[in-house]
Image 1 (tube, rainbow over the protein chains, first blue to last red):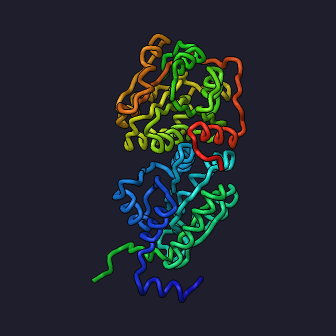
Image 2: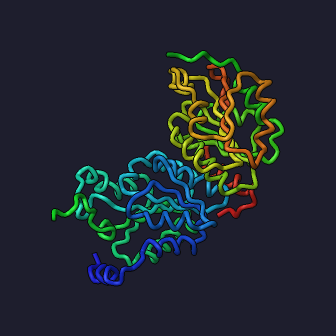
Length: 185
Length: 197
């Protein structure tokens, strides 16, 4: 953990979801599909606001894996945004990506790893990286806001130029503590 | 609760469906729909799934969004579509005008010993698609009906369509398309003039 970089990012209030969106645009990504997460809310808003981006809301994350395959068949670059609990829903569908050597760029906001208030998020959060790796997906991490553009840019190159399946895990520390109950007055 | 069985011969139904296909791109769900499409005539514009159960419709959606200039048909079975039933909602919300989803419905899981599926136990997938908001929904019971509507597969404007083709249970002789997914992907993209990476 790069504590100095993290604190610098927080102090400057780096717009890391905006950086991720800008990086996706630079990488010529034309489709973004997602199951919402609070950490992805700004990215989702930006995608829907862009007339050149097809933004698709999913009922479950595995739909997005298959959608990314179809997008590539038609010549589109795509990305799939989800939270860590959604990774478990994708497991068998990832076979499609390996068998056909489709590129995959997944953006995963982490739960269950940092100041988590909900114990039900912990088992899948703990298993997220290992589950992806078991299914042939390589894992990169963003630990601090100022790393976001660089890591996503590298992930996009690996996915679309090197035909790899890549998941970028976004540290829960960047999303901040979720306020579970109002402070007592 | 059970559903009355369909009568159509599946091979004949798919042969009629894909006759005069022109520029149509076809994604097939695993199992018999892949065999049926291959038996009707192999094409670089076919993408055959051999796994990824529940994913055929969404592969079709990603393709249809990428290529609004081409008609896209997903051809799958009732069991495969049931596993990806949420995908029908995603397609309906996204409203790809050039996409048709055609379900070969025999009410059974044909590949695994003909166990009744939900579609054979009372669930009407056409009603699900109608409720989801598909633009055009048809249930077709005979080959003449398939012939009558197949021209609509070419439409780039009136989708998404959902057609339930009521076929008879039973497994015809196997007709096996290539299982190499990279080959299938590469020839499909080459057909569209996309670079082979």
